[in-house]
Length: 280
Image 1 (tube, rainbow, N blue to C red):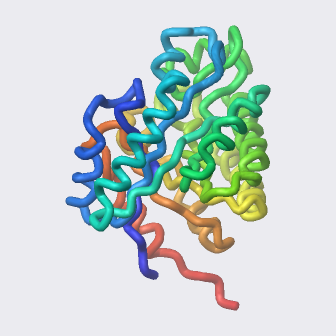
Image 2: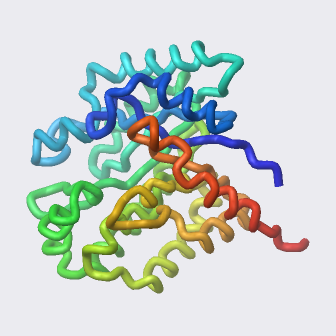
Image 3: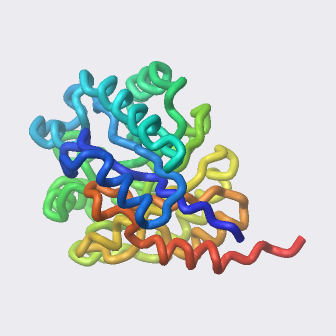
């Protein structure tokens, strides 16, 4: 099958837990690696007080006043690389239960410019309010594991949120995909083991929901760069089953630094090359 070399999940200097490098360094690296399409998908602002730790909140997402600057910046890149690279303008939007109207306002305001949405679950209820699931292993242990009482319970709640996110994202009018579906495994090597049967059960139930919602998946390879994970955030069998159902499986480096661009592309290409459509 013909494979479009497309990095569908990347970040910018507007990400305060990433790099201040100019966008040209990311895109020039993508061109050097032979990519044909590049989606800029920064985290938009979060509601005031979304998490209790105000310093962490400032790291997680840009302030509201910077969103117009980011959108202008992404459009500038699109024009600058016209004819050299297909740049698409997007956002990595968070599922925000209880604050969905906040997300709706952002999408409505910028709908005419948004070509791609990566819709992700980064947050769960926990000790003291909303907790970030991918901050640190210690924070996960203290803020989530102690709250739910077992890894199994945390994982169940995570996939409950993923299913609710899929249902909400179905309404989005632009191209859309679910971000790093197995982000819950980020600290798997230093936290209590997650039962692989539980993951398989939940993911199998999610596949028809993705198909119904018209939602692709972000085949996110960032876990390969994380010492406590060591693998992509999408299982190989899951990718194959999504492909069988016609669910778009879009590579995402989730690059937060220019040198991250292209991480794990060879692995992703192998997954697509291994796909054998079911005979009719």
